[in-house]
Image (cartoon, rainbow, N blue to C red; front, top):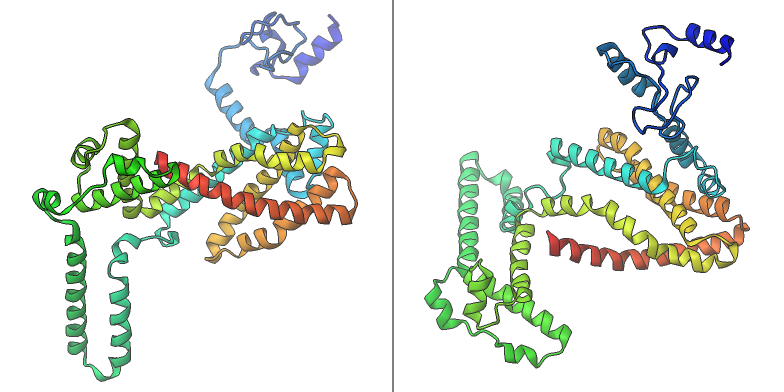
Length: 392
């Protein structure tokens, strides 16, 4: 080994540092790869070639270095994703991949971080919850609005004592209406058996597949509300229906509906937390349109998927950046600008820079993709809602 090189390595690093030459070994402690004493890092797994025991100083030093010297791939990925639409995909497809983070992993990471931060802000800022107190106010919202209108129109003619009496009378009436609605299905089991006539399995069997499913769900929902029987097996026995796994599944969905009605915002949070995974699995279907439209461009199907993941990653990254400013301002100005102006322009530039076609052709395909996306997104959103509700 070159003596001059060894001497230089000793001078460059302090003897207390784990990178010093005297701590190097002939084998990687992580993967067992044979090493030369000149190897600072393992060429196979990139772990530091050091046999020095980890001290408190080493631990703090590595922790601080990990914060100050963050991964360069993340830095280049964020910078090029924000300011070079389509170019980052072109470079990644051309083989310059060590410079950037994995598109699939980056998309999942940034989207999950966005929803975690958004949920945290919503939790500590209840006023940002658009559905807060919806359940509590749903029954008496109309009555309260009418009372407020009457009170406002007569405020000048009523004394404070009269206003208080007026409000108390309205509140009493509201409570009576709520109690009346709640008592609608409060019949005892004997009354249920006397007054409720279930639809038999034979009657359902005469319907087509789709009609039978809708009728069964409607029947079970009506019986669930009417009888207040929670146990699916007991309910099916009362209805005279077979106690199958499918019938129990349909009946138990009433509990899901009840939970959604009681806490709609909880369901909304649950559903939005699944959006990254929904988009992840939706992307391959959307990539089919790119693969067909750009069939002459000699890009593989996976390369179209990478392009779409970069587009989605930009949207979540931009929403993450705009989250705090919108919170400070108190409305969604930045988010609106993102979806109405920045997003469409970014998508057009990404198409232009990645696929390298003329402006006219790119504009036409940009319009086509937006139409396809709106139609498919609506269909997919309905399916997403149904699947989420089914597993909620």
